[in-house]
Image (cartoon, rainbow, N blue to C red; front, side, top):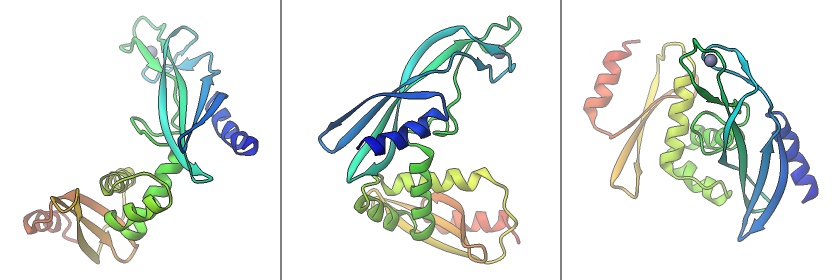
Amino acid sequence: MRQVLGGIDRILARVGKRVVSSDACRETITVEACSTVRAAPCPACHRWSHRIHGRYVRRLEERPVLEQRVVLAIEVRRFKCTNANCPRRTFAENIHALAGRYQRRTRSQARALHALGHALGGEAAARLADALGLRTSADTVLRELRRASGRKRKPRPRVVGIDDWAIARGHQYGTIIVDLERREPIEVFAGRDAIAVAAWMRAHPS
Ligand SMILES: [Zn+2]
C-alpha cells in the first residue's frame, strides 16, 4: 500500500499537491492531498498572484487499485488577481495536468474510459468498465468520446459506419458515427432517428 501511495504522491507532486492522508473504507480508498502552490498566474491577464483568496476540495475518481475504488480529495487554492484592470477578480490554480476542467475523474481514468468506448461503443464499454471496477455508465462513456472527438480537428471522413445503442435501460438511444478508415469515433449524439443522421451526412458531404 505504501508503494501504491508513493505512486499517487509522485503524480500529485506534478500539480503541486502533497498527500496528507489516506483512508480505506468500504472498498474505497480516499487519498487526501493538500496544495503546496503559493502563487499562480491569472488565466485572463497572466499576472502572477500570491494572494490566496480561499480553497476548496475537488474529488476526482482515479483508476482502481487492488480492486478498491480510489478517490482523490484534492485541495485547490483560489487566488485574487492583483491587476486592477483585469476582469477576473479571483481564479483557481490550474490542475489541468491531473484532470480536465469540470471533470470528476482524473485524466488517467478518463483515458481508460475513452479507450474502452473507442474499442467497444457505449453500452459494451460500460459493462466492461464495470467489470474492471471503473465505475461508469454508457452515458459517461458517450460524454468521454464526445469530449475527445471535439478536441482535435480531423481530416474529412470518406467511409463511415453508424451504430446505435440503448442508454438508460432502453429508454433513450444514442448514435455513433465512426470513421472506418481511421477507426475513430467522429460524432456522437443522442437519439437514433434517420433525420439527425441525414443532417449529419449533408453537413459532411465528403
Ligand atoms: Zn488577472
